Image (cartoon, rainbow, N blue to C red; front, top):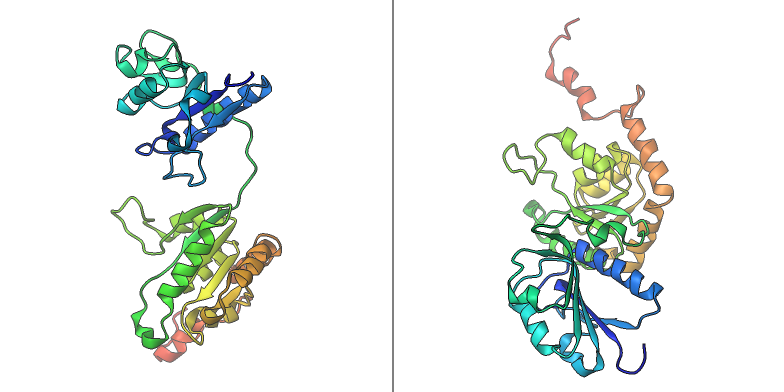
Length: 304
């Protein structure tokens, strides 16, 4: 393609009032793979709400393009109709879209529609299905608390949570917010400890400032990057010591550099160490806990 013979690739991920879903972006990757393999020049336009670096529609000169490709999602609505008006000089093609109303201006404005599903036609696989393979990313459970007001002036919970979530937002990982509170009626929460343990066991690492975030992760054999949110250290520090777990950060010493060091360790040697500690909890010669002395303190004769 030469001169202004260039393709503009758009989708719902391009609109200020649209959204970028994982499926839409993977569909885009499939289209980019096809265009790139054919040696065709193209630009992708993004919503400023999703990708601040752009390019955005406001940055574009429509005259720079001879063709427009709209990728994935429903071919419906005023925003697509506006594309037809603004890029009226372009050959406009929709690919991998759902056609809800074949007579709508959003659909009829395209010169060609390569649909994934439409009335009276056989469906084709969504473009995301054949997108290029993706590299593996760690799956991270995040267990935080904003409570524990019993620590009074020693509380650093808000600062710790803000620092951790800011740092995590910059990590290339899949983040899963978890709660140790159980609820038999709220579908978003686990109803039993076994349900929560099933989730924890499938994670690569847990980031937490909660005592039970640490202990339950280790019990499941999953490494935990723990931060004690109480100045001077409190129950999280004590529990890490009791468990022999090294990946503990004090609130007043929490920096990105320190977090990165323990993150790297948790995703390497930390897995084996967490497995060893978790197995130790279940061993016949497990370290004593407070319940071991309960019967004697009760002053009652043991039966059997």
